[in-house]
Image 1 (tube, one colour):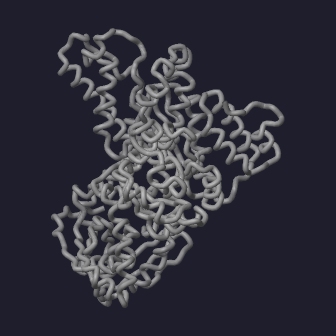
Image 2 (cartoon, rainbow, N blue to C red):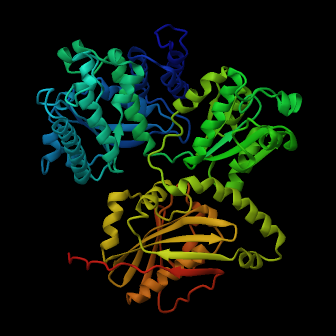
Length: 637
């Protein structure tokens, strides 16, 4: 149990009293470890005291302000207190300003034309529908088609309500589904009728999950109640006395999940899993035990547990995560099990960067980041050695670390429960990502063999395709917009429902770029959205995968902008750069392409190009164009 009592020697109380800024790190660790409602509420009290005392934080860790609207069929307190605490103590702390709706009035509040919800302008809307509204209103003996139809309508009505909240506020929506009932009634018949509370709620939850659009995230109360235990999650007295939706500990579970889903939308996804080898992917030390002596495989329980971890890593790869190795070993010995051990699930070709040496692990991680062209904040490091984990945490605090459980049998669940690998969408492109990064190493080798960089570009025999946005590409476009941070001129985030109208708007010029070379297919790697304003084409969004930097894709995007602007008879192209912590690499992109700086402010830079005087670049990419569908004319303001 987390120690949060009032004893004078309690570390949290002592640090709070002395004004020690490491209080916040310890508070986060204590919150992560807390299991019960009472523990978390006590920690939240300490948090509020620290805020009252204006206790400083470490540089760069001040919480980001965010506005949350919480609507639902339950009493909001103490859920609101717990959500605020989990947000403030997350890895990326958030200071939540809350708008709380009236008890069980969420439908009216969302449908009200000019109500408080729209005026609040929330960043996230949270909807907790009342479980009483998820029941079949006819007899159990009704035809199953009628029962299933009502379940589908219940789900559709909720999704439409959540979609309306999104339309009114422009904010993403967290919509809770329904915990399953704990009562045994009506006995074994509960699984034979779609009208029983048990089956009806499962049908509604299934429909909600399968039909929710990308701007609606399901907060899975069904899963959370099952994980804790359905009977332990229920508290009828709490409902009758104060209209709580479950037991105190279950409310804490749900608050933690709401906070996690909220912060997940604000931080970038993890892209790289860096793995230790000895006693991580197999039992034993390869340098001492040899391939025949390591513990791995189906012969015994421990070997199966190590194999299960490898299978999980292979699943991660299929989701689009990149696997890398950082091991203190001789390279030839470290690679040997991947090539020769019959029980190895992972093979050398599954690893995009293999660092086996006797240097510090942080140095290996930096090398991997350089090779892949990715930020270290997108890395997760997994090791069984607490000293190695602590070294990486101290030197590279931006890297998330998992210190593996001493029992290999518990490690798969431990890694899954870290919540570092949650996904919100999955496309066919994700499964190809590892191979794309692996062949990048082959391209680098070719570059070393050629005399000049132009010779190297010619030898790649690159070909590309430029095409307007289309419905097939929209999921991938939305994913790239959400994930791209470095080569992203404005970092404007758009979700699928916001992208679809652009395809038929004559005032918007949109296109994507695909690229391939003789080593493989990069897939869709660049996105541009530009708006016609008077005689100008204003580049609203330009983002690109860092994997194709210096491949002349930038020049081909410029050529396409120039071609489109001239085709519309526009006199100028205006480029916008909005600086962020991560996109400094493109600060001067427009000037390198011949634009003139017209506005230079700390939070915005603008560049202008005269289309009549500009000349297209000659590149080594053979470009093909896919024809654009006809667009509707813009409506006059």
